[in-house]
Image (tube, rainbow, N blue to C red):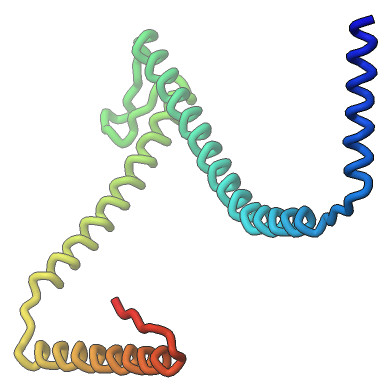
Length: 180
């Protein structure tokens, strides 16, 4: 009986709450406004996330490919070291060095090609650095220095006139101007 009485009181309380809320009018405009703001925020962030996911996917794919290549290279090196594969030299010249297996020949050929590509990239970087160093070591004539200083002065005057115009516009609008 105690449980039944508790249930009756609970139902009675719930009916009173329902009647109180039924008489009041609620508007859903704030909820709709929040929903639209959230939709706009999501729509603004979603393309950025998609671009980031695509970039990360490409990075992961390239890392997987690189890991497969390195694993293949490690397996080939391990096999060569364990098998003691002898090579045969045609005419005893290093250019005509061939192994008994075409897979080994292909492996070393790709390694040589990759090494040559890296050497070319390094050569280009060295040339770029040399030209950069040469430009830094260049001494300017007094006429060149005067022209550089004059150009900087013209830029400074142009910027200061723009700052003055902005300050004047802000002062006319009645807002306090703050120039950092």
